[in-house]
Length: 545
Image (cartoon, rainbow, N blue to C red; front, side, top):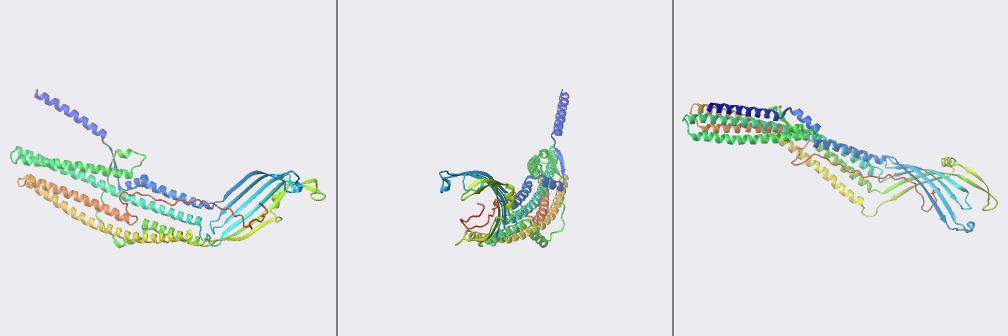
């Protein structure tokens, strides 16, 4: 009966074991062997934070196009009609009022020049006027005119104006955004490498903790045999089993840390549109490089001061500040402008032919087409031209004075910011180089400590096997070996991390805690293009109004 029960129990246990194995095989995630270069490439291609900065360069490129649009020609046209009825104002009109019906159109193009801040305009206008005025000579009257005008600043705005300031600043901001993208690539690559080596170290720590647990389990197995043989007291078995519980807890913690490290690496390299990587186990197959040549600190500092992207961006900020000072200093000058214009006029329509004394009797008409009137506008028959200078200058302390004073302070701030950044750069690079040196020495010391700890453990285990040692001493040797192995892993990780940091800080500053990559460019202000119309004495007839 007992044999039959034992057999059925073994069969059931076998079925359960087979089911568990099949379930584990189904649930086992796929493994992705990942090299360091593959991780970096995935991050550069898919990291959304890096994509934000990449899109920021496109935004600043659009801002450059926005700023240059101020030099695009502006087309304008007007089409309308009007009716004007006035009461009789002289004896020729009798009791009748005067009605004037007007259809008119005007078309023109104006443009701001990208040099000298001058503006030009060309316009063409036509009109058709009918009236019941008895003294008119044309009914309907067709008028046409072509006008050319140019306005040129002579002091203020000639060297630099608001439009050119925006273009210059927008271009520098675009260059800064490209530098910021390169800087972000360096920072992202460094972060990925750090995460990669952290995952590598945490997985190795899992292996160390698992091996330590197996050593404790083997010691407990041997103690159980000896307790049953009466060679050692039962307390030694209790001590070994307590050590198993402690190391099993350490293994659980190590697995949790490894899972967190794997997710951090996934976050950096995963494609947001593909969730498969989150259910794939990452196997970092790259091995640490080992200790290499110690860095040349002075050469690294020199390289960083000449090649760091943040220093180059700060230099662009300083140039922008200088541009603002130049612009606002120019704005303090008097606004002196040369204004010129020329207009040709033509007249056509139905001309009323009169005979007799004033106002005469209409005895015929003569037609003159609109084309003829337009042709006449391009002849010097009826010219209207103007040339002159306008001057304006604020009295007292103006807005420009205060703006220039503020810009001067901002320029000095930008210069001091660069000086401070250069000091920070030199300090950071030197600290990073010292970190490489110290971690390299720590790796050597930790490796020697791990070797000695293993030799001590093996010696203590041999003594225990022949009955010359105790469970306490073997357990202590196991703990020392575990601590030495963990210390070697940590120092190796610190060394690889210091190499990554030392390489990165020569090109870009490290990201601070909670800091995100990004850049903000200046907004572009829309500057309307003025259409010069010439300069005339107030109240004087211009011949085309």
